[in-house]
Length: 170
Image (cartoon, rainbow, N blue to C red; front, side, top):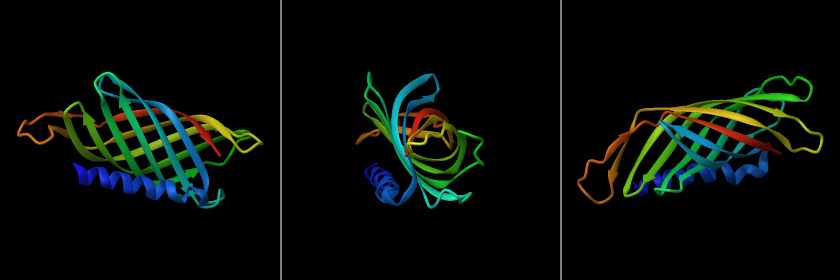
């Protein structure tokens, strides 16, 4: 599992490091919902290039944690993003791409890949910091969580998730 964590971190750094070159950087505070569980999540996303492009490369990183049993999901993502034509002070955005996920739940861990689609709506402010909401849906094959260093088969967990985030964009 160390290899998957390294890949997630490299993908996350690839998106966060050039954030100074990005036109749009989002700080996302939200909730990751899968099965019957809700985990708090914090993430950052960067869309590179000028605002007038309809399609831009996008990178992101997020971490969600379950404080009671010590579960953690690390996510690194890459894809395409864009903004729909603005209507007054409201702006809508979209995104499509792939994500690498690294799960750790108690003594169990596993990794998975997923595709994602997202939509966002924010209020554009003159001072350069926009506020809004973003909904992201991830789906892929189930992840098999195994007990690290043992022959225990662990269990399978669905990675179909919905993430609803409060977004600050600058």
